[in-house]
Image (tube, rainbow, N blue to C red):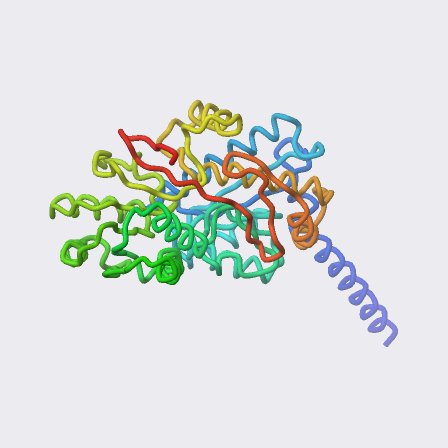
Amino acid sequence: MKMKKVLAVLLAVTMVVLCFAACGKSNDASGEKNTNSTGEKTIKIGLSGPLTGSAAQYGNGVKNGAQLAVDEINEAGGINGIKLEFKMEDDEADAEKAKNAYNTLKDWGMQLSLGAVTSGACIAFQGEASVDNMFVLTPSATAVDAINGDNAFRVCFADPQQGVESADYIADKKLATKVAVIYDSSDAYSSGIYEAFSAEAAKKGLEIVTAQSFTADTKTDFSAQIQAIKSSGAELVFLPIYYSEASLILQTAKNAGLNVTFFGCDGLDGILTMENFDASLAEGVMLLTPFAKDATDDYTVKFVTKYKAKYGEDTMNQFAADAYDGVYIIKQAVEKAGITADMTSSEICDALKVAMTQIEYTGVTAKGMTWSANGEPTKPPIVVKIENGAYTIL
């Protein structure tokens, strides 16, 4: 009987020791996980985005812009001596793959994130991050629900703002009174902008003479939409869509002899460097964007010079610029919050939620940028027109 009691006590002690050992190893991306190959303490930043597929130009731009900023910060000594590590997973702009990317990055030791690049993917990524109380600062996901949580913020415009600003600009500049729209009804980004644009257009006296939709399954042939617009009497076509679909629309419009003004949002940025695209088709296209590479302010000149030297110009778009700013925004917020490398992701998130509402940031894509607690930034857009294969700021 005594032997059984001794064995029982030994078993209980062993289980307690194992429990403490397990708890010590589950410290949410702290301890051994947040050191680099040379043993330096680091803060790990994760990101999900399309590195392959039709939206790869966005994802690669974001990856390059973020990496450029990380490298600059580390070369300057890091953040209060703490170096940054950055890793991006390919989600192909797919929501389910974005969830998988989140979990892969979490296993890597991610302590805070740049979320996901595209809206649908970011909604999925943010859903996972919200459960874990992981900080998200997406450079480019514009859908309202992409930052649906108190842990999430964005660098870019929200969809409603782009829709409202576009309608206001078209009306105020008297670009047209009769407007047609082509939008992707299966995409949160496109539909969100269209809905806001439609409501604001009515307020500003713009007549939407036809609204033509397509889906992810029908985005290879736009002849029906172009013919409908040609018959509608539209003077301008609003394109709240991505550049890959816009390139097909512009080609179809030329073939059909449709001679109108085309006006888009930040999703059109990158069309000029799209592989095998005839840039002359985009001549005269106007779009909202926070970034123009020909701007002469010091922030833009520095970014453009360094980006071009390291990555060339193919992915030097507003997505890259927003990501570059995003990393520097994180740096400023981390400094404000007094973040240390041994903090868990949840502790970091709680601190950054407060710090983000207390900082003011000026960089490549905005001057005097601030954030409210709902994660939305103050960020006035600019309008550019494509002339001679380049952006002209209007």
